[in-house]
Length: 489
Ligand code: ATP
Image (cartoon, rainbow, N blue to C red; front, side, top):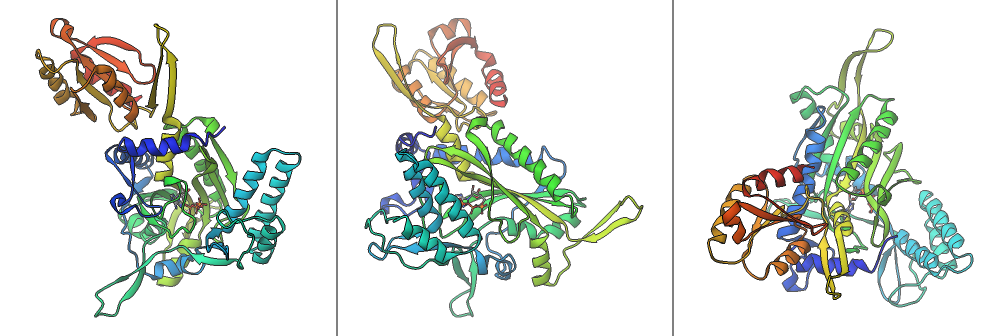
């Protein structure tokens, strides 16, 4: 079960321990925009690096690119974003608050379900299923009627006084060139995928790639989300990690199923428990897709999309071929059963697209734990700990001399200069050791080593494990090797 009460505590913790700050906070922040602090940016980088490695190093037929955020404006005409990258919205006339229609109805259904009265759950299911059918049919009048018939109210005005439903484009635009020149409207990319499609032939030719092959990319994307909420779950500026896999037409379902399974396994490989992940098939397919599924994660506020896997057919490459008038085809030399080559075709595409910020939130919401226990003397003790998997943790090892004198800092600094060549370390000599352990628990450091007076005699140090709080003595000379091994696990 998701624990909604944990969520405000997690947000406060992220701020207090240098993970995530509201953007430009000294000016009271900017809605749905966040900055990553010293620990958050390192966690994010570790997740990004692991994804990149999983795609481009573990797969011999996937390469990476880094395309620009700005793209020729026709790109977004061709991709369909100018005409149809929009969400149905409705405004409350009394509060002037704007809602995404699906969020408004889902929120109402969730409340109904939580009430738990007789028939409430069935009614909520019925509402969601009607909503999905109406959205699939683009039936805005029907959707408005569904809102009115169920007397769904605005959270602020508490009234049911709604405008008609309208579409709202989510792309941000800006101008390129000086004001004196003729300014050209360009868009901040709303997804990284198009940078891959327009480079398809560049990569295929220069890398002599043979189908099936993939192109991976990570980078910023921008969406003018109307209902931006739930911390870093839905932001206006966020980061995507996308991979487009180019396949022979007719084989797309095989690859779609392959990537569904692979991506689920990947999420488990970064420490997300299987019971917190599930597939959700799309009822309404986007205009470009012949199959689509979300991998959902159980966030503290419920099951929500973490990653999308889409079989995008040859839609994108065909559209770019049409708009650019440049051939975006592949010559397949392999032979069919009848002995003839497959020849020229526009490849089909299976896409995997995951939000990096949503992954950060998923990892943090699993990791965040408030623990209480009784000590031997009967008094209670407690801690807040981030049990982030060691391979993703921002700092791997804290190096702590027991006291600030007697040569202990010198030994500790020696360990520091040895270990920092291999992984992120943190050195601290201030405060009682217990207090320092708690601080390391709170930022999620999986290992601490303490250098004490005994170290000077036997060259042994105490290693303390974050998750169990167990401690053991290990050789000073083994610290780097032992921690490196544990981080790799
Ligand atoms: P949603 O239905 O939640 O708006 P989407 O279906 O529009 O998401 P896609 O276009 O499939 O999302 O984008 C791929 C991934 O990018 C999503 O699975 C999500 O992880 C991430 N993502 C999309 N929009 C945002 C956002 N506003 N903030 C953070 N991450 C996002």
